[in-house]
Length: 205
Image 1 (tube, rainbow, N blue to C red):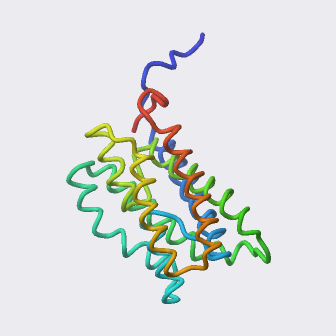
Image 2 (image 1 turned 90 degrees about the vertical axis):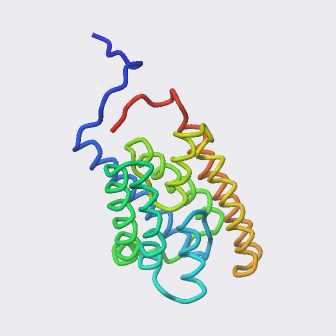
């Protein structure tokens, strides 16, 4: 019997857990690629990377701390389930980003490869989290809120915010690294914009 794919089905707890683990793993691996060649991304992850390059403080600690204020919006506007899953996602990305270099030794990686593949990994990870009512915090929370309440596409809003962060990066990073980062941001946000929209995916948490 062919299943009715047009009927929304609720995700089970184990499905949410698996999606969060997969999503945060992909995001963290993309961040490791970026950090290896001093690239930048958008949202709170981009802010954390910029601060890491400027101060030497590990990305994981910065990323976790920057996201703390956004949980208020998550609870008030998106509900406790979303806030809890997002908190866990941010905590996992923070933890993975600290420990991945211990498990994976990258001796050399071309900046263009890091930008395109890293951006793709982060985009796919964010998409996995979005579809299970979670995010990696910060601007992602605001992007989801605007899409679900005002119809503003999350990917396009994210692209606008990321553009501002990338412009700031010109004052911190070499010119070529910012250009590579722009390509990565385009890949990341196109993945989210083209795949996370009403009717594209019918499962829900």
